[in-house]
Structure formats: structure tokens, C-alpha cells
Length: 373
Image 1 (cartoon, helix red, strand yellow):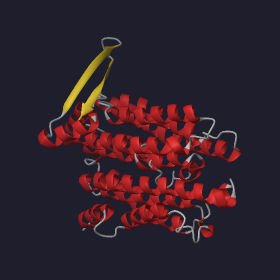
Image 2: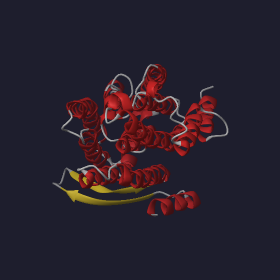
Image 3: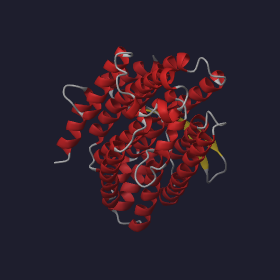
Image 4: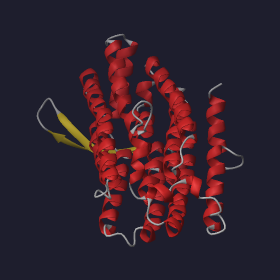
């Protein structure tokens, strides 16, 4: 309700609100904590809360027979809270703190069934891969603090623009720091070459896959690039790199998705490909179309993941509890007559993701293609 009210206010006024509390450590160094409310924050907050509440409602029945029912909801709530803290952050230090919380929650959720060796390895793989990007993000934050002396977004952008326009800064060092910031987004949004954790993240319960792939973890990388767009846009080499990584990821993810038999892994590689579209749009400076596609993809992909959970449960009544069989699309022929509602919702979600008019993803993909010319 709060996020919807926030979005309505932003639509009506488009004003920016920032509240900051200073924590003075000594005369030369202080930290600021607060929140920043702007159009980007309102878009992300309504996305996280709406997808999050739908996933939680779905999870109530899905996880009702699991011994870790209460633990599951504790992790999910902390995950959503961390993501909301990330999108409302007013400076880079605050973003980094919540960025780590999101990574920690993903580790706990992917390894939710930690007694299964495959799930234990998958959560470790996600954790280690994301630490590579997180280390780059931390170095980039410290590098820009050395250049500008500020963690606050508005001060950082203004000081950096002045330094670059007056040629008072080492441009190679600025480019390196910007690349390190982008490395954090590459890992979190599963872009090539740090995409390897994403398919294995499917070892967690299906509602977790829906939340990670639609509104929280992978969206964090897109949000970071969007938030730092005024910084990246003055460094042409980084913008070109963002576009290049996006293009490679689009084709790489789509090709791998075609070769999958596991329904959840196929959707995971599809997510990777769609995130490549968003990175491509951001690299071209097409900020609005990237966020538009983030929204349309989030709802379509959440629908598909929740639908896949229903399909997997239906398969388990036929083949028993065996992920290799219950998630194998080759064995799912003739299932539609048993799950007609799931069939229809899955069908429309697939059409949307394919960009078939007049469904949502058609308009966002069309906008990205239009801006690319």
C-alpha cells in the first residue's frame, strides 16, 4: 500500500525526497544514512512489493508440508526487506550494505534444502561468484570516494562532472573505478561471464526462483546501473562495454535456454537473456525502456516460475519426488488436460515473454529496438 501510494505521488509530482542522518566519526570523515525517494525508487519498490506478496501467497500452500515452513518465510521476508532497503538507499555505502544482505539472503534461500548435496553446492557457487562482483563493487566505491570525497549520489555526480569537464582527474583511473562498479552488477544480474551461478540457483524451492529471477536479486544489478547512469554516461568506454556485455548475454542466454530439458533451468537462462536486453538498453542510454522491460519481464517471469511450480507438483503425483523426472519437459506431454488453469496462465506468460502483441513484453522490447536505431 505504501509503495503504491509512493508511485501515485511520483506520477503526480515527480519530486525527489531525500532524508539523511549524519554519523560523524571525526572531523574529516562522516557517514550519512537515509533514504532517497525518486521515480526509480517508486518503480522498484512497487515491483518488489507486488511480486513479493504474490510469491508469499503462493508459498503458503506450496511450502505447507515442508518442515522448514517458518524458516522459509523468515528468509523470504528478510530478502524482500533487504531489496527495499537497497532501492531506497541514498548513498553508495548504504547500497553496499544492503547489497551484501541481498547476497546473504540468496545464499540462505538457494541452499534452503541444505541436506541435499546439489543444493549445498549451488548456494556456495552463487555465494562465491557474487563475491567476485561484490569485491569489485567495493573497490569501485572506494575509488570514487578517493576521487570525489563523497558517497552521496548527487554530490558524487556533480563533483565528477566538474572534474571531467575541467580535465582535473585521471580519466583512466575513473574508467577503471566505473568498470569495478559495473562488475558488481555483472555478477548480481548474471551477465556474461559471471552468469554461472544462475542455473544452479534453481535448486531452491520454486517460489524462491520466482522471487530471485523476477523482482529481487537479478533486478539489483539493473537497478545499480540505472542509479549510477549519470556517472556511467560521462564515460563512453563504460557505456560501450555495458552494451557489449548486454548483447553477448542476450544471444548466449537464449541459445543455452533452447538446449535445456529442465523447465526451471530453461526459465533461468531465459532470465539471463532478458536481463541482457535491459543491459543493452542501459548501455545505449535508453533508461526508460530498460526499466519498462524490467517491469514487464518481472511479472511475466514470476507468472512462468509460479506456473512451473504447479506443473512440477502435478508431475510429482505421476513420477514421484525426483527432480530429474518431475522437471523434465520431455516427460510433460499430455499434462495440459490435468492442469487447464496453469496451462492458460503459462501460455500467456510465454507469449508475453516472446514479445507477441498486444502483451506486455512486446511493448518494452519494441521500445528497446526502437531506441537502438
